Length: 112
Length: 116
Image 1 (cartoon, rainbow over the protein chains, first blue to last red):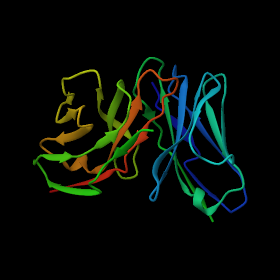
Image 2: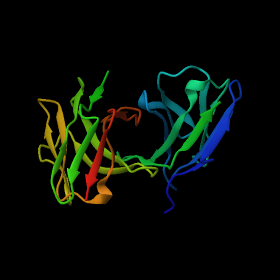
Image 3: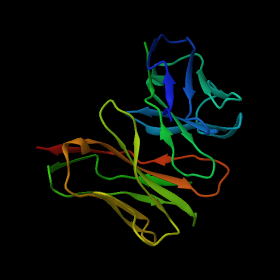
């Protein structure tokens, strides 16, 4: 089985722009979670989608949003980018009934 | 709310030696999972080992084992016969069992350097 894939791998944006990141989970996995990783805040949960529904959301402003499609692929969007949004964004998928999350390689976002 | 604490930001060990990474957590839940994830430099995060809270027996995976002390809310990782490829950031993580979400709560990580 192919692993979790994330595109693009690297992004450079300027303040005020918006960005969309994509995640394709392992085939058959219906749960997709997103995490933000920064040197200062560590790994923080953004949100989780299961069967196209957001099940949980972390403590992030409304500029951070996401969605999941019927094929379980997920996207996250950040609008009005700020310098502090520079981070590695990780996506993880999980099979129903199992507790292991499989992580993608991440998208490194740099906001200038 | 659950929290995970890793008090060792960095550790170093000689190749073939044994090292123990510490993790404590706080929760009022009785049923949960604990994990150790490894993130090598510029590489993907992978699961090293997991522990179900309802199991008293400590989990082991080859050279990796845990010391799970539920009452003390402690979950340490022991790496035996350390190898250069073990050099990575190690994260301890908590997941509530049975909740309607698969949210992982991570500690701040321990950067382990294995020296030749």
